Image (tube, rainbow, N blue to C red; front, side):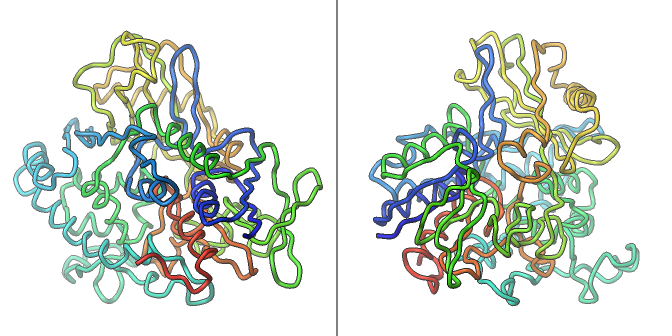
Length: 499
């Protein structure tokens, strides 16, 4: 039995802790704040409750696997999961609206044809067919295997997996530097413009990048996998919000004997003889450990640069090892008078400009009695991506988001009882991420710039999990990182994932 110190209490950290405890190890989680969940938090007031982090689940199999592997009680007995259907309603800048059903490629094609014109659905599904090729080529190395450390860590994942060349006659009309000499598209925007043509379809594809804080003009072509995953496996909502999932994982950890120490920030990882030997806490005390699992970066080691990145890529196309300069979330929580309309979509995406830049405003309106004081009220969450760091005039930006939703016909502004504005600084305070930057999932291509820190570090006995480690951000990906780290610790550094 090894003594294992886990730094942080986010989803990836707790996933690793629960699995390691089940394997017979003595696990202690050190969390600098006073609660678990990392960025998966809740804001409550006057009978209203809101998710302040991600509001939907994708790839729920990652969470189901965690609960199966750590006890007899499956996930569905601990959290009520519902697949949202319709999946999303898009409001385009020209006034067009399209509602897309969940997990039905045929239904999506029919909806697109009806709203955008004949052949729109065929073009979209042809793109998703190529996205399936990307998914099949990268699913295991991106999601189910730990990332190796070293100069060749990216390996094949650094190469563009998008399968279809762009015709050369189209390239001749494009701006210089927009495609490689092979004629293959190199960015998601190139894919969108070459394959979809209709500006609304282009906006639809690019909205998946915007939702993760990625720039479509820089994100690799392999980012086509983002809509493929969502339309193939669906989006899921935990009754009570995603905080209910964090609570269930925390309860599973406690049931398996994991010890939590809140208000115990870790200043650095201690090492001796080329091996991790424990942690030094913010109060100067030290705790010995045989293995350290660091989440959110690796404090006090040569892979920690103060950015929270832990030595991986930046997630927005910068070279590996640079600090993250990606996007943060700006969120407006709305307490609304009046009942939720029966035809309201759980998720709406408003295609608009935010402070003069193209982007989207995502509006989540769960039909969940746990989030409102009574059926005569409604809770809504508006989110957009912004640069990391302080936001100038946040109340004015909040007004802009509400106005964009109202311009799309959602009718929220006149119903507001009160609102709470959540800036990147709030997220930074909860997670320690500089500037409140939110990590995106890993993507293949771009010479490995969209990969994250390998799960095993050069220091023996030190491993990394969470959104800033492989396989990146998002609830499912962070949870998978915990599984990968647990596998490396239990099975040895040569472990290459479950078969």
